[in-house]
Length: 298
Length: 298
Image (cartoon, each protein chain N blue to C red):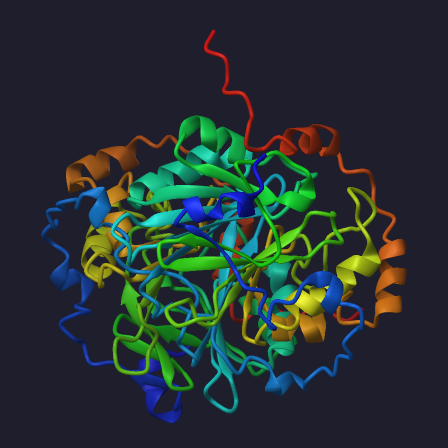
């Protein structure tokens, strides 16, 4: 595992981001819970989430039914090489994903995880065995092995497009949210891949893997709810058939995170969830997501 | 069942479309199979399908896991009333859909079916009992009862946005594809809701409900593959976790419809599919989709 910042100057697709006021360090910015004043229903949806006039970004949302996981493919198709990133691939659907990437003529450069998943095995290890040029990415704070260990404030470039890395711990200690850039030429509205920090109308559990309801509340309110209200939020999972939401919707209607912090903490402490059936397989595998051994050729 | 064309002048949201050269009548236009010359992979994806700069259309894709059905919500949020349409709702997920519509402050005006489904019960009947203002829509050619019976060339308006109705029979005799408009102010790229006429890399079966492989091939090649190559295609189902495709992708990679007509017909005749488990419940229910009796209040 090599910390990204040490050799960032060697990799043109990766660049350190200045810590901007809009993306403050979590520890400094998330101490005061933000009061939420829900707008009336008719003020909602004053923006669209439809077909895209942005011709530079190719975007695909992919679903793995067994664990209800979303994998996201993003590519800069304005770049001759069509560099692409895959967020939260699942081992079971790697062949599907790589076939699509091939059909679309894309060059996968990064296979990324928002966090160390407990409910499925990441596809990043398998991808590296099948596509040796692709590099795995996960947060340094996760403690997991990968080719690139990212930190809050990093920017992950694919062509001229990039994802900004925001630390959103609380579901696990190493959770990151990847957010499209806010400068000219980046997708509009912005898009945030929230992992399990925020799922549609809910959030990931906080009772294992270094989880903390206090920290999750701070993370979401300081790093996600401060994004423009029309930002499209894409979670790592959905169990009810929703595919996308927005900051405005979640600020208003999230059944947990729209509450005050104490109410949120009480909700999270009383979920009474069962032990995840995949955790004992998934977590050890995902801690070495980038360096899984290739299948032996017997 | 009232044919839409008879009282179209009374309904501002609905207007007859002149039969334009780009939307020819099926019978006249689909006789000659179009030769397909697949472009090389790197010519693919020269356009994006990402977050949207179009601020008028609100678009949501919703999934029903048991039948792997996609339901689509479209609304004109530039209109003060935020009029919306719902394409292919499922009975089991009606409450989810209506709650989302309420949260987003939309006014559902049409609950539409692309065809008489055989694998699930449509939600349109239930929607009418819960939201009496919403009207059901299906093709006249389906023979099913609904508030509005649409025909090829009709335009279905919601606010200033509209869907063009294209007859794409072959999976069933009454299948329609709904396509966003091509004039100024309509979504770009265009979006087509193909029902079971085309599903991603495949198509609906053609061995019951007036199905015909010959007719399906003609329908797709004349009504869908003639759309701009960057048109986003949204099917009624997906079983592998894909959410969207494009005309260019399907012309090149559809495992059935990219072949010549005789090969396609041979493929379709040899699928050896089992009898759909839901058909004997679903089809009778869906033939009266707009006039289901409200649940009795015992």
